[in-house]
Image (cartoon, rainbow, N blue to C red; front, side, top):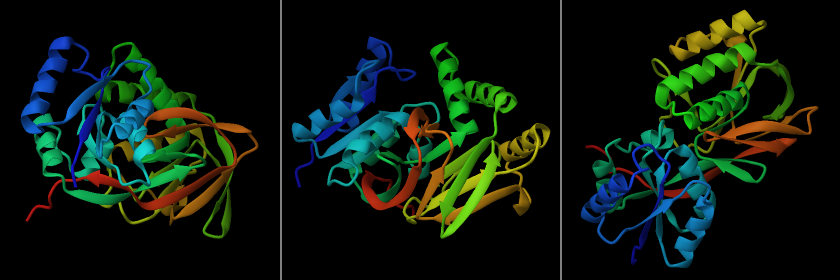
Length: 299
């Protein structure tokens, strides 16, 4: 099959904002991935439109050059098709790239893209939107929203993430929900709800990870400690990867669930982007719906 590669790079990504940096990046792409065309998505430009244009012009591989938000935007267009997603980790956290096993070094990631080994992975879906990492309600979107505001003022990386987390922890409000999952109904008042595309674990300090991206499950996680101080202690222990008694949270693996609320709309995070969505929220796993380039397995 004739492969035509288009790289959609986030022009606002850290390290990509100057003409010199972009020229250096373009030259690196030309050396490691000959024939690939680079398009820089400028601030406010619709990444999904750029992806659709690339496909209309014959691209068979579309590479998301950016963080998890850029990956989500590209994946939302190519999911369920024969178009292959590639990932270049140019963002701040790059969770999806890490879980794929992509190296942080751009030249190494480009060499993996050049090798062209593909695999099918799952995506999560909620109503009419997808996510490749996770979705959250309550505290999680508040953290993301606060972090993005700090990014706009020049704060990046773990400093911004930690500051946003602390601020959100002290301002959170309890969310009342009904969850229909695996034939059961869960009535919960909780500060947060987390839905992962496949199962998440926390290893060490602030290191959520997944060992599989193709198990066809969602991981529902609902903490329910009572009281602000108890929840703060719960959150601090989670940051350091400490375990909790089963009575302090619900953790369920499923392929579908529904979340109902008395609110007509809820703020929902999807791979680091926050949006408002109409309730009820209907979540499902779309098994092996996304074709993506992955590293060759180590021997």
